[in-house]
Length: 340
Image (cartoon, rainbow, N blue to C red; front, side):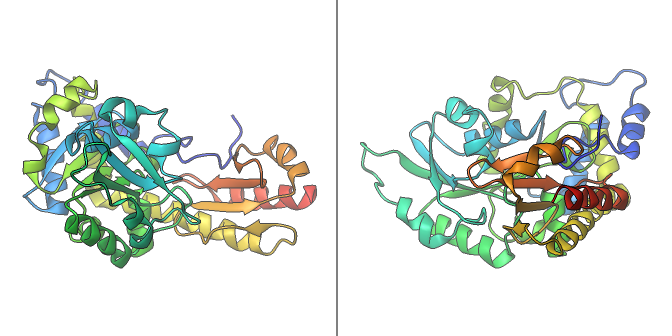
């Protein structure tokens, strides 16, 4: 398989993660999370976020988002999100199907949504003919590779709580955001007013398994039942717990995300030197977005795998990962120059 920049999902599994999984692959342990490895992993999350949290492990990012949203909504609620949000664009309608809620996409030019735009959807309260606004969902890192500041997040959570809404963060690339902000996870989640977090690791070196973190355990009173109904309850959960233990040990998450971000910044720097290429977003983490001449895209894809983000404008997305090398970057840039 040729290397490329299509997705950080396409990278393999970090050797330390595989080693951790193998280390718990002996003997028998109670299933469905009743094992000591899972307990240790939950305790590790409490070290990051405080003891007053609830943690639920699930299979994947869509499962984490759906479980988060399902736990904090009723089917008559609406979910406010960016028009580019993963729950809106890339989850095959799973949030609508499994929550019963209406998604209200907010226009965005950089993947972020802001209070002034959100306010336009905060109406119809107590009017039975309208879906009742219930939760705001933001992505950190956004789908356009940008990163919310703590102040931007707090402005959204303050507005939401004033209106009685909750706020969900899709943290599929939360490690990349933490590195970009140079802050601990807690500073831009729990401390900034987020209610529930989808904490991802698969895009940063893990094999499988994400975590749903509730910062008020009272909001998770039904979550264990919803997780089972949603088919997101692992039987051999120790293999997820072991991954998170290795992920946090010696800050492997930080090492991986730092490298991915560094490679994206290098790619952005090199692309900026090329005439005829337009960068469309400021690279905040590990994604680079650019507009290319349409006629060279397919030829470049023959050498390096990547996706077209917007067919109409010939905008492409290049993602770096923990195993991207400088040779990958410079080889790709040279290939692009030759085609131009």
